[in-house]
Structure formats: C-alpha cells, structure tokens
Image (cartoon, rainbow, N blue to C red; front, side, top):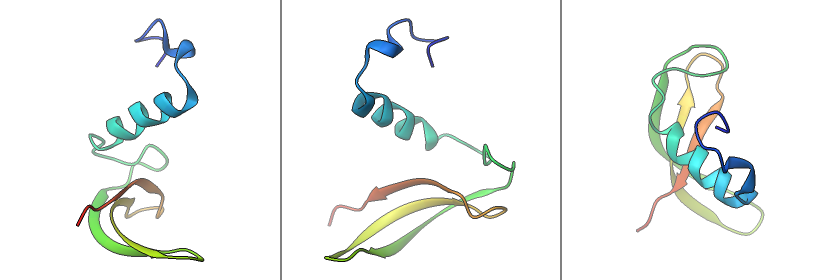
Length: 72
C-alpha cells in the first residue's frame, strides 16, 4: 500500500487493518492459491460467546479472506 499512499507507514496498525479489510471484499480470487472465494453467514463461537458473521472463504485452500460481524 505504501506504493499507492505516501503516508501508509504513518497510519496506525488499526487503521491499516481497517483499510485492508475493506479492500478484501473486492477480491475475486484468493491471494494464496488463486481459488474461488465464496461468502456465507455462519456462527462463530469463542470461549465466552457466539456471534453471527458473514465470512468470505477460499474454496481452494480454505483461507479466511474476510470475517465481519453481522449486526442484528
């Protein structure tokens, strides 16, 4: 991203992460293996709670491309 935005290194890690997460939604293929990406709703559970998310996952290598909590 520093090739496209001169102040990229001045952004906080949180802001860099937000920008990159937002751009992932536009991917057509997986950056790891070139496989197809599909989106689906699922329930994710942790030690203390469960939440509904919309997740984009590669069908070829099962890499999680994006996960966004679904607002109810």
